[in-house]
Amino acid sequence: MPQSSDAAPALPDGLHPDTLALHTSIAPSPYGENSDALYLTSCFVQPSAAASARRFAGDEDGYTYSRTSNPSVTAFEQRLAALEGSEAAIGTSSGMAAILLMGMGLLKSGDHVICSRSVFGSTIKLLGSEFAKFGVETSFVSQTDVAEWRAAVRPSTRLLFAETPTNPLTEVCDIRALADLAHGAGALLAADNTFSTPVLQRPMALGADLSIHSGTKFLDGQGRAMAGAICASRQLVDDVFAPLIRTAGIVLAPFNAWVMHKGMETLAVRVQAQSRHALRVAQWLEQHPAVDRVFYPGLPSHPQHALAMAQQANVGGAVIAFSIKADTPEQARARAFHVIDSCRVCRIATNLGDVKTLICHPASTSHGRLSEAQRQSAGVVQGLIRLSVGLEHPGDIETDLARGLDNAFNVA
Image (tube, rainbow, N blue to C red; front, side, top):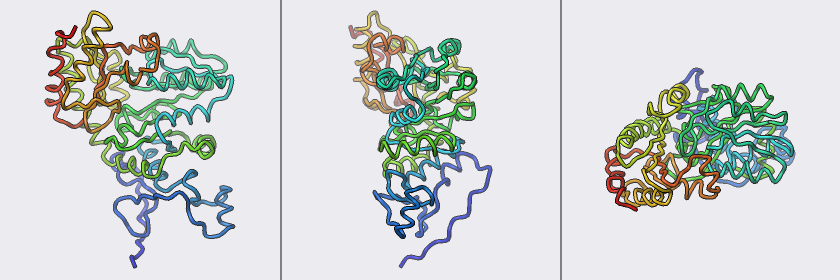
């Protein structure tokens, strides 16, 4: 029979995030695996009926049912919380499930939300349409103009929500300024940190109350599984979100949690390398005659470049958006499609954060369900292309894009 291993000693204080990404985990199993174990089970055998009753009542620690908690999910949550510098985290089935959980936990009929109009299309639909069915009103404002956020505050305002940088235009908000505004109004600030990850940015250190993730993106990094998470205070996670997620069932699957948990071990090296590649590609795109504008926080031409460099560890991230020169929206769309379809290395897909470079047309994909007026308000024009830069040699990415850009003007 295998011999039980001794418990690993507690981690010392003061470790850097790169080290925490490798070593933060739950207690090791009796077999001493170097790689964290995967707990693929729907339920857990209880030592007695009395212990089962205590655990289901919350009077005793112990796993009971994987909709309530699971060791693989716990390991993911603890590792992400350590990287974000938050007291706790809770995993969900997707990034949108995390935003749904946030709204269901924090809002009620009559409450008011202020949200950037530049966020992901599904977030706009969820807050602006679905939550409205239950009496929650949302005002959409400029991502970058704090005065607009301030003017939108009402006595019923309970939540401010922003992505930073935004999807797809990489607009950056002043997290600390919005946190001060929210707290002065008796509200909370939630920041979607999917694009930057805690490698580049830790919103809660800048005053945000919640940091939201679509783990499907960079936390995994290889496009294998869906996941989401909320990082927040222990009180919010334990008293607000955990009871609700158990009831609603939008929980993170153990296998997906294990994939995210392992993905975070290489998160820092991936994000840093992808960001270096993205900066080079963005600089190249800015010089191409077929490109009208490049949206990338690492470029001095970006309107919030100084703020981004201060908030994002002086790194621009791995996502670029750029628009094609054209005379009409129809021509812009045709030229954008031509550039995308001409790629042989960049893959046409709507995910981001993958080690493979991905390219897409936001107006017909991520923001395709919005009205044209909503797309225009968010700056998602027909000639816009989003590029999530991977780990390929940046020269190969540039050559791939040039295949379509070099003759884009020939497309009517």
